[in-house]
Image 1 (cartoon, rainbow, N blue to C red):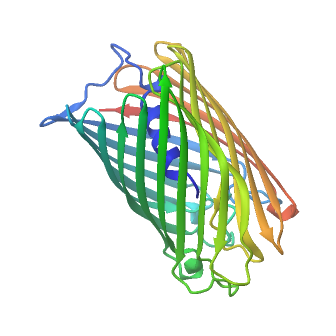
Image 2 (image 1 turned 90 degrees about the horizontal axis):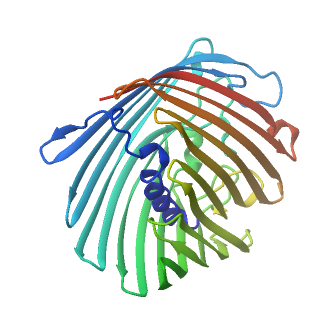
Length: 396
C-alpha cells in the first residue's frame, strides 16, 4: 500500500493531540508509576447488537454479543528519548451465532531518539493477531465456518533531519501477513516498503515536500489458487504540503502518481493517480475536525483480478460538549476497484456516532452506533449493516 507508513505515523501523532486527550482536572485517573515510566490501564466492557453479522446481501442474520477490550500503555520520556509500549485485546462473544465469536490481541513498541536538536531516529515493532472482517473485500470464508484468523507483524526504522528551512526523512518498513488456515495460504505475504521525503520550510511552520516511495510484496506461494504469481512492486512520487502539530491546521497531504509492476508476465503493469493525507482543523480548543484520504494500489488475490486500487475518504469530528461529555461523528467512503477480467467496483458508505460520559476519574459510560452500506457491480457483494454498542469504561 503506497504511502502507508507516512499516513500511519501522522495518525498516531494527531491522535495523541486530539480533543479526547486534553487535560480534564478531576476526571483523570492518575497513572501507575513503574520506575521512571507511567502505566495506564483501561477496560471497556459492553454489549453489541449487529443487524447483519455475516455482511450478506440477503437473509441477514442479527445477533447480540458481549465485548471486552483491555488496553495497557507504558510511556517513558527523557530529554533525548521517548519510549512507548502498547498492549491491547478485543474479545467478542456472540450469544447465538457462536462461530463468529473471536479474540483479537496485539501490541507495539516505539522508540524515538534525538541525538541533536535537528536529528531524530525512530524505530518500532508490532504484532497483531486479527480476525478477518466479513466485510473485507478479500474475505471468502463461507458463513458456516468461523472467520479467518491471521497474524500481522513487522517493524520500521526511520531517520529525520530538520534544519531551519530544509528537512529530510527516510524510513523503511517490513510487514508480514500470515493466515492460520491453509485455505487462505495464497494471501500469506511479506512486504518491504521504503519512503524518502525532502521538505522545504519557507515560513510559519508550513512546508512543501516531495516524497518517493517503493513497496515490494512477496507472496509465500509461487502462484495463488488461480495460477497467478501475485508478487509485485509499486513505486511512485507525491508532492504536497505539511503543517506542524502546533497550529490550527495540522497534518500532511500529497498527491502524485504510482506505478504497479507485477512479476507475472501474463499481467499488465499499471500507472495511476494517487494521494495520501491526514489533516486536522482545530477551530477551538474543544473541537477538532480530521480529514483522511488515500488512493493507491493494494494487494489482492481475487479470482480474475490483475490488481486492485482503493480510494478511502473520511471526515471525523470530535467535540467536548461539557467537561465530562464527549461526542464524535464520522462519515466515510471507500471504493475498491478491481482490474482485469473481473473488472468490478465496490463502494461502501459509512457513518458513525459515539458518545462518552465521564462519571469520575476511573469510570465512564460509552456508546457507539455505526452504519455501512456497500453497493457493487455484483449484487451478491452488496450489504447493509448497522451496529450499536454500549458499555462501561474503567481506567486505572
